Image (cartoon, rainbow, N blue to C red; front, side, top):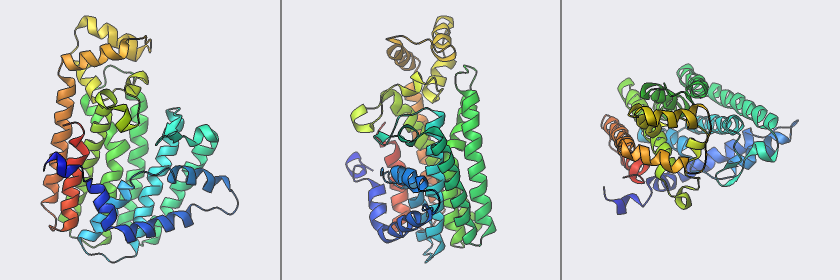
Length: 333
């Protein structure tokens, strides 16, 4: 796959292929985020849902069902469920991180308040469970309920792992599996379950979503160090300033000498940062090969995602999911 091919953006091709189903998902989301008694709920939800985003996670559910020619209607319910869970976690994350911007717009907690963001997030979680139950599948309910618990667990683990120089790559991977990959893998797996795909195929869908989600998060963390602010829409170094131990930081700290550990203790554990610290941190990451090694890990996880697809029917949708695995990492290659 050439870079020129990748710039055609497989998620956009997937959105075109799934246009009718995505329209039905959006309609269902609009219906279910309504509230008779609390008008702030649709106001807050519409602000975040209306901010755009690729709808990547619900697309994964729709695509997984399309591979097995499922003709509905419950893939629409499940795609909306996945989007509600994702939106709820964003509302909660912005409160925890004290964020002021999301997708280039002010966050809900900034426009309204933290209480509104938390409570509307709770409402969306409740709505997601109502949608799950309507499918009539206990297996689907089990998968998505477990994913919701894993997401929350990953966020709590990140709170304890951040700012702790003893945090290992294994702990980082556990955090990433919780906060990001759990919803990717659930989104793909339930598409197979609702389509009555055989267990091996459902496992392959899970494996694909898990690996894609991990690659996605590693790339996101790496772009915080080496990304272009104009193309990413994010400030370089936010994770360092927030003292989050992402993979390139963890790798650099693990290789640090005594003098460098003094720097990391001051900036990460103690939070005493001054001008020039970000640049020095990035130079240490380059010095120890942490950025190159992190880049390679993202590519390795992308390759694992593609390998999982070989156990599925080879359709146009499967090929787009393959291309999506490449596209996720192409910005850092």
